Image (cartoon, rainbow, N blue to C red; front, side):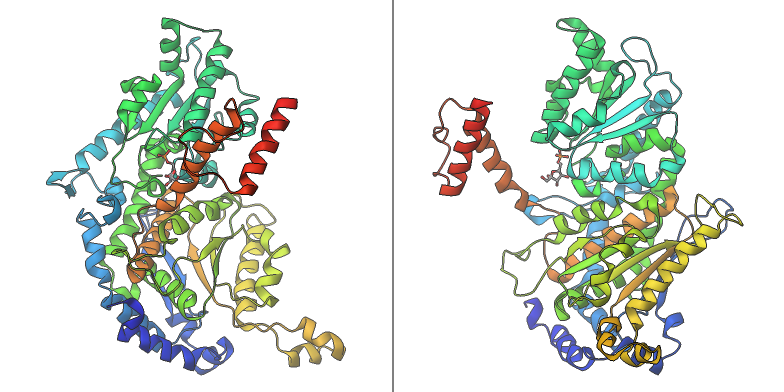
Length: 566
Ligand code: F6P
C-alpha cells in the first residue's frame, strides 16, 4: 500500500485539518502542563562526575496534541519502523539499491557485541582497526612518529570530501576544546586549488601529515588534492624521484579507505592504511577510521568517549518505546511538518560556537540520505521527502535570518540545541556570559511559539500604522534539545540522534536512505567536460556522448578562449 493510501496517513490528514489553525497559545492555555509533559530524555554515558546524565528534548512547542503524536506513532508502526530498525541492527542488507548492510552502529558496538554480516561477526575487525588507529594516534601525539627529516609531525591535514571531510572537520571544530592545541589541524576538500593553497600556505612540509580519506579512493576532488599534496610535500622536503619518494610518502601520508588496492596504487604503504567497510556509508563514517584526525586531535580516550556517546543513543533508539524515543519523535515531527504543513525547510540552530559546522554536517546527513523521490521498489512518490536543512549558530543567526523565522511567510520548524554548561565560563561571576546565551535560546523558543499580539503591541502605545509591523504571529514550532555540556560523548550522542531521526523519516517515506545516486550525473558530466576544456579542439571529446546544450557549449568555448589568451 502506498504511504498516502494508508488509513493512518488519511487519519493524520483529517487531524491536520482540525489542528492547522490552532495556535500554540491555545494549546498551552488548554494544557498548561504540556511544557513538562511533552518532553523526553535519553541517557548519556556517565559524565566527568560519574553521574548519569541525559539529553532532554522539549517538544512541547510543536503544533501537536496527544492525538497528533498518537496518530504519528500509529503511522510509524504501520510502516514497520521497529522491524526495519531491528533489521538495520541485525546487519540485513537494507541499502537495497547498493545491496549492502547498513551498520554504522557496529562502529561503536562494544567489544563483546556480535553483529554479523553474511555470517561473519564484524565487531572484532572494528576493534582491531580502532586499536591500530589508537597506536598511530598516540605516536603522532607523542611526537614519536617522525617525518622524513626526522622531525615530529605537528600538522595534520585531512584530505577528503563529503562524508570523508564534513564529519572529521565538524568533529574537530566541535571538540577543539579537547584537542592537543600544540598541533594544527586543517581540512582540504574542494577541488578548487585555493582550498589546498590556503590550508597549507603556512605549514612546513617537514612537520605535516596528510590523512587521505576516501571510502572509494577514486573521488576526483580527493585524488586531485592527494596528488597535489604529494608534490607539495616532496618538493618541500627536497625529495624527487627514486626510492626516496616512497620513504617520504610513508612518513607523511596515511590513507583511510575501503579500497586498499587503489590506496596502494597511489603509493601509500598498507601499513599506513586504515580500513573500513562497504556497510559504512560516507555520511555515517565519522566514527570509523575516517575519524583518524579526530582521534589524533582528542586522543584515543576522547575518541572512545565519542563512541560511547553514539552507543548510548543507539541503545536508546533500539530499546526505548517509540513514544519516548527521541530520534523517533524528532523524525516523526519532521514528517508532520514536511508532509502536512508543507514546510519546505528545517533549521538547526546550535547555541554553542563550537558547533558552527554542525549544520553543514547535517546537510549531508539529512539531504543525501532522504533527498529521494522514488520508494525502495522504484515507485515515484506523491509526497514530499527530506526537507532542505540549513542553519547557523545562535546568537549570530538572530541578527540575520531570524527575521524571516519570526515574521516571514514561511513555516520553518527549528531545532534549537543548547547546553547547561559552557566550556568557557567567562563573565562575572564566571559563566555569567553563558546565562546570556541560554537566555537567548529560551527567548527565541518562546518568541517563535507565542509571538506578540497586535493587542499587546497597541498596549505599548505603538501608533496604529506601526502595529502590523511590530506584531509577531507566533505559532512557529521548535524543538529544544538540551545537553549537559559539549564533550566527545555528547557530540556522539547528538550525531546519533540525527542519524536515527533520518532513519525514521526514511522508513516512513520508504526510501533508500543509504544510497546517493543523485550525485553521479554531475560527476560523469564533469569528467567529460574537463576533457573538452583541456582537449586539443573545442569540439566535444570523441565518443563522449550527445552534444551539449547551446549554453554549455558556448560557455566551454568562452572558457577555452580565456584560458588560451591568458
Ligand atoms: O559524491 C558523494 C559522495 O559519494 C558522498 O556520499 C561521500 O561521502 C563523498 O562522495 C566522498 O566519497 P569518498 O569517501 O569515496 O571519497
